Image (cartoon, rainbow, N blue to C red):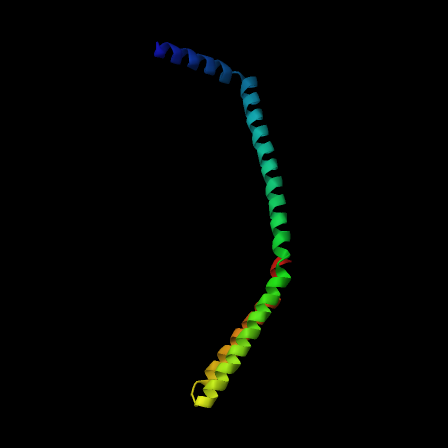
Amino acid sequence: MLQQIKRKGRKALDKVFNNRLAQRAVVTCCTMAFCVSESMASSKGAGGFSKATSEISSYQTPVSNLMKAIAAVIVLVGAFNVYFKMQNGDQDVKKTIMLTIGGCVAFIAMSEALPLFFK
């Protein structure tokens, strides 16, 4: 019984796919479906990316100001650290000064370079 159904199904498929017009119709339908789905997906993706970009760009100024505030805290803590090391007579005062200045310069440079990533 199953063999007969299988043979009839194969014969029906062979008739459909042996017909050139049917083949072209199937290929055209598949191509149209693919193109429509691609165009729909790209428009949604582009809208999502533009929305995300505008939202992230709105955080530029607050994040830049926060980074400058962190640099100011680094300078204050570093200045007290240097002062106490100088009072105690430690030998690594230069190292502490350089680390404090390096951290401050790095945060200021990052806060100024941040807007360049969004242009």
